[in-house]
Length: 281
Image (cartoon, rainbow, N blue to C red; front, top):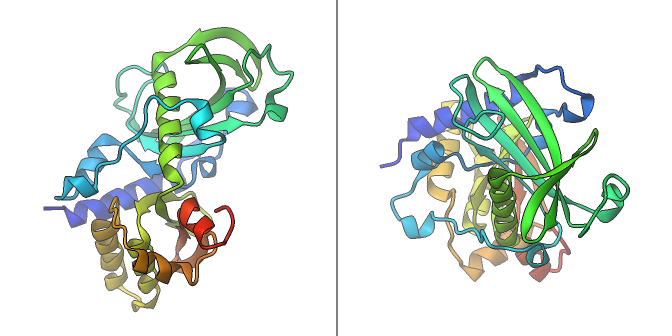
C-alpha cells in the first residue's frame, strides 16, 4: 500500500530544500549555480522511488537505454535528484540531504576553442550537493565522448588533463537513456511560484486530471488532491488515443497555471505534440 503521508512529506522535503538552501562555497564563479538551474528535476533517488512505488510494477518500471550512443539521441538536457554522495563520487555523506544533477549536450559553437577537441560531442555535467543544514555546493565539468567513453576534459575555468570517471560516465549514459524515452513521455512540473521545480512522469490521463485540481476549493482538500494525483498518476503509462485527443484540444506545447501557490506546468510528449500539429515541445 502506498504511504500517502510519506508522499506528501517527500514533496515538501524536496521543494523546501530546493527553494531555501543557500550557496556556500569558495570556488570560482563558474561553479556557482542557482538551484533554479536544476528545475524540473526528476526524483530518481532510490528510497523515494520505493515510497512512490505502485502495486502494478509493469506500469511503474522505467527502462533506460544505458548503451545509448550520442547519435541515437542528439541534443538533450536532463535533470534528476539522486542520493547523497561525497565530492569524489564515493560513499553517501551523512551531512547531505540529496544531490541534483543536470546533463546537457552543448552545441559545437559553445565549446569550440575551449580545449583540443577530438569528436566535438560534448556534454556539460552540473551537480549540486544539498546539505542537511540547508546549504549547498555546486560544480560543473565538460565531458567529451571519446572511444565510447565520456572523458572529463575541461571545467569552465579552462583545461584539465583528460580523465575518465566511471560514475560520471554512467551518469551521462543514464541521462542519454532518459532523453531517448523523454520524447514519448508526458510530465507535470510542480513547485512554489518563482522557485525551483520538480517534475513527475505521467500520461495523457494524468495530465487531464491535473487540470481538475484548479477547481478544488482552498484548504486541506487541495493538498490531499495533489497527494492523490501523485499516487494515481505518477509513473503511469496508459495509452488511450481518446484521452490523448482530449488533451490535444487545449495543449500546444506546455501549459502553465498556478494552483494554491503552487506553479504547475503540463509538459506533453514531444511525439504527441508533433502528431497534434503543434511543432516541437
